[in-house]
Image 1 (cartoon, helix red, strand yellow):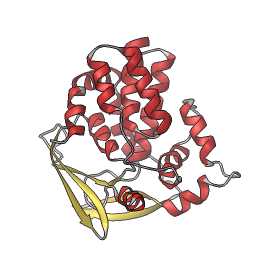
Image 2 (cartoon, rainbow, N blue to C red):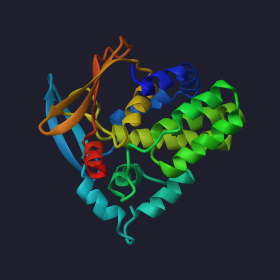
Image 3 (cartoon, rainbow, N blue to C red):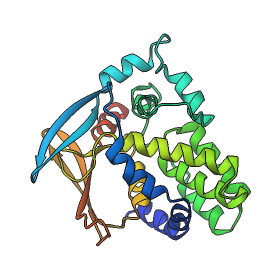
Length: 256
């Protein structure tokens, strides 16, 4: 078990309680069936049994062009401002550009230091004020970190109540960010792997589904780096989830 898994397990119970309370998993699962096709994606269709599966693979080259254009609705500084403000008029396509566009920015570093251990220590002590400060510090430097938005949602719900503006804003951020990630694939096969720009987002997605990891393996498929997450028995009867992490591999090579 990795340190990340250990720390994540320490808050699994409280996260599941909050997720269950707001019904987020139901919304996420439903979104898999209603997400519209995205223009900035490469659609790949594979055969899985007798069903045709379509994955909206992010086209990083096209996304980079869009998020750097001041005349585009996907101009990154504006998307960042709107997402941080929990602007509910953001479209799924705009949030896809926000999430995957972050990986095209010069400052992109999926291996930056995480404050997760510090956050768990604060939560363990019941110091919500300190936890709130830690979350804000992480998201200021790492604004697409789904795992920390989940913690933010949990914290705001505890602090202000389920129906508060603070909790609703955090819920919107988790819902839209996870929907953008899940629009890239269902993760149920190697061909329809879910594209993530941060390894922590893999664990965040599994948390939303209430899934527990049995074993993690790194595999290569057609030159693409995938994480195969073998799962403990679950209500969906899924054996594994697949995540495409090739963009993080490119970032690692640049660091060295």
